[in-house]
Length: 385
Ligand SMILES: NC(=O)c1ccc[n+]([C@@H]2O[C@H](COP(=O)([O-])OP(=O)(O)OC[C@H]3O[C@@H](n4cnc5c(N)ncnc54)[C@H](O)[C@@H]3O)[C@@H](O)[C@H]2O)c1
Image (cartoon, helix red, strand yellow):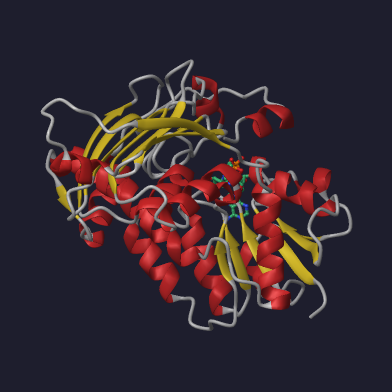
C-alpha cells in the first residue's frame, strides 16, 4: 500500500477539522476517499470523496483502508467493532468508548494485530508533557509522592451544551467534563503516573449549566505505594487554569498552562534529608530552574501522521487505542464513587457501572432548551487545550 485511503465518519466540529488538515496536504501518505454523515450536511462539504449516510455501507464499500471515527461517544464502540471486524485500520476519537465494558468489547474486536488501532490522544504530542514524561521515566524527579492537577480552563457556555442534542446528557454523551473535555488530561495522567488503586470522587451535576451530567469534579486517588493525587476540573469556571504540580523526592515540578515547566530541585532527595539531618527544622537546599521546551507539538496532525506511518511503515503508535480504556476507567470510577458515596477500588466492576449508566439514561426526564450556536471554526480551534 502506498497511500492510506481514509473514510471519516461524523463531519461535525472535529471531523471537519481532520478533513481540512488532510485535504490541506498536512498528512503525508493519507487521502480521504469517503465521508459519512447522518445529517444532510454532506453536499456542502463534499469534493471528490464518495458520500455515505450509513456508516456500515462505507465500511463495506471497498473504498477505504482505514476509518476515522468522529461521532458522538456511544457510537465509537459499535462503529469501531464493525470496522475492526471488517479488517479496517481504525483511528477513534477520544474517549474510545463511554464506559469500561464498552472499551473491553471494542478492544476485544481488535483480533488482527496487523491492523492498526489507535486513539486520538493528541495531547501526547505536546512537547511539555513529553518532557514531563521523560523527567519521570528517567528518574530525574525521583519517586513521585504527590500529584495535584487543576484543569479548570475547559470553560464552556450554556449555548455549547444547548446546541448539540447529545451533549450534557447521560444517554447522549454518557458524562460531562470527564467524558468530553478531560479524557485528554486523564490519558496524560495515567500515561505519566500509571493507574491508582483507589479513587474517591465528588462530582456536581449541572452546577453551572442546564445539563444533567457533571460539570464540576474533585477526585482524590491513592496508589499502593502511598502516592496520592488530586484532580480538579470544571467547565464552569472562568478564568480557569491548567496547573499540574508533582512533588517528588528530588523536588517539585510545576507545569503551567501546558506551556511552562518549572522545577524546584532539592539538592538532597527529601527522604534522605528527612532521616539524615540532625536539625529539627531544617529544609533541603533547593534550586529554581525553568526547563526549556522547544515547541508545542504536532497535535492532531501528528497523531494522523503517526497512524499513517504505522500502517505504511510499521512505525510505533503514539497512542494505541488499547490505552484508552484507562482514562475511561478513571472517569467512570470518579462518577461511580460519587453515585455510591464510597471509595472505588481499581480495577473497577465494569458491568456494575454500565448497568447504572444505562439506567440513568433510560430513567432520565431531563429536557434542555435547544439553542443554535454561532460558532466559527476559529472558536472551535481555540477550544483545544
Ligand atoms: N481530539 C480532540 O481534540 C477533540 C476535540 C473535540 C471533539 N473531539 C471528539 O470528537 C467526537 C465528535 O465531537 P464533535 O465535537 O465533532 O461533535 P459534533 O456533534 O460536532 O459532530 C458529530 C457528528 O457526527 C454525526 N453523526 C452522529 N452519528 C453518526 C453516524 N452514526 N453516522 C454518521 N454520522 C454521525 C453527527 O451528525 C455530527 O455531525 C467526540 O468523540 C469528541 O469527544 C475530540
